[in-house]
Image (cartoon, rainbow, N blue to C red; front, side, top):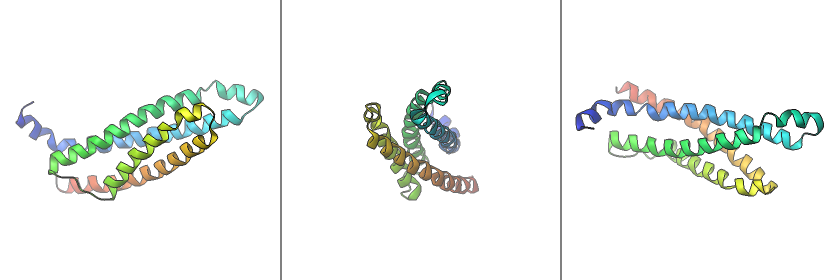
Amino acid sequence: MTLETLEAIKPWLNFIHPILMWGLLAATLYAFYLGIQSRRVRFAEGDEKKALIKGKFNQRHHQLGSIILAVMVLGTLGGMAVTYINNGKLFVGPHLLAGLGMAGLIATSAALVPLMQKGNETARLTHISLNVVLVGLFGWQAVTGVQIVQRILANF
């Protein structure tokens, strides 16, 4: 890749992170739904439990959660990298700090999975609590991200 090619695509790099994150927010909300269904399976009995088990909610939640973990961490790093490439610095503010906090929250939440698989209810409740906070922060990040994109478009 030549320097000219990089300069030509540089302005468009600003939009990869927001598009990726909006898709990730949708996937996170779906994973939240799968987690709720997985919990319903755990407490259901009889025919209701048999019907819910067919949905494989636990397996789907775990698989989607793994993808979300990877994309969130890489998306966070990518957003920071693009900001640095385009501006020569990072803008330390609420959007960046909350994004870094979200990366830490999701890593901590994922680290609880082995304990949850062993039946540790405290780990399960902590996992749920961390992810509720994560979804709340993610919603706020979406709003502040749109504000940043609007500023970028104004200078485009």
